[in-house]
Length: 204
Image (cartoon, rainbow, N blue to C red):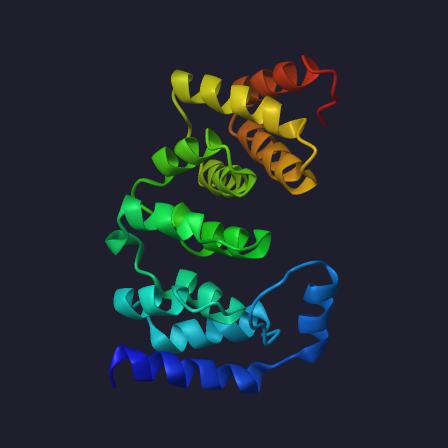
């Protein structure tokens, strides 16, 4: 079966996963997709496991302006085969916070250059790129990956700006990243506490 036929068959399978209530709830929250079947993440994960990792199919699915296609693409893209320029293109084409979060959790945190990518996106003018960067770093900190001194300074400087952003999702993502950073060691906790306190916020 060629890629076009596979994409067609996958899109047809979403009809069986359709959940109108979830789709309507997303629309009510402002998540506007061209097409949204309201499929749950566990159902999409099952589909991804059935398909397996597949670079060409992931690329084809991402091009579809369909919520489920994009999420599935992040689940089946082999991290070792995704070039940085492709990750940047996907980030530019990311339509919603949900897709950004799913891409970070399902794919970007596993890229060989995940840390470099995250720091580059933290410095972006795009709130969505920054949000994705913080989600990646949160996951890397949870994996006990410690940044060097330069990385710490860069992360803290960027995070302090993001925490004060009027964008609540970005604010929450950056605060979560600082929390995960603080859990690395007592030294990291002290750095995080001092930084957050310097802008007049409490750090629990």
